[in-house]
Amino acid sequence: SKNFWADIYAFHLVGQAEAFLNKNFQSKLVEAVPEAFRSKIHEGPVKTVTRVKAKRFDYSTLAEHFSELQALKADKMEHKQRLFDLKQEYIARCSTNYDDRTSESGIIDICRASVVLENEEELVEVFEAVKKEFPICRIKNGFHQDNDVTGSGYRDMKLNLLVSIEDEDGYECVQVTELQLTLKSFEDIKKLSHLPYSILRGDFD
Image 1 (cartoon, one colour):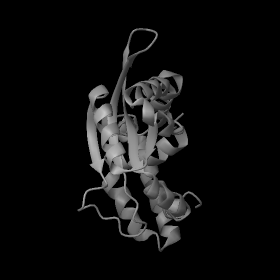
Image 2 (image 1 turned 60 degrees about the vertical axis):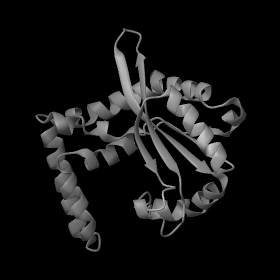
Image 3 (image 1 turned 180 degrees about the vertical axis):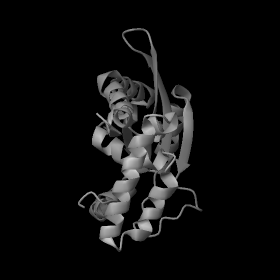
């Protein structure tokens, strides 16, 4: 199949997650979070291969060109043709270019979870506890005063946590996971804004 090199890494990452990495991440998270807040943990579904394949272009060597396509959305026919051409070029590059072949490695929320808390004090307590148990690769603090929340007003803190485990053959498997910490008041806002967000993202195209 001409898509073999373009698709194999997506299946590899999702397969690892479904087989054992997600279970390890979720169980370790439960151990890390203080017992009083464990009931507030919400395990997210493993990202599907279809969704991973849709996102991988953002991390490919053609990412800039895919971003430029947004300007063409008003002309649906031109946008559709240009998108098709770019995807074909991406598939062709994957057979020889390692960065494109593994572009899915930029997707760092294949395994995910969230904790919805009542107030800032609880959020800080959970953050400090998680920080002690997981290596943190990145923090996106949506509560920072400079964070632009124009529109929905939703805020959260995203922690990208490193999970490492040996598979049954003794090979170390590593993935970066995502934990969202938010407050119940903001979670209510998120639920109300989910449909408009899905439409803007193109889920119903």
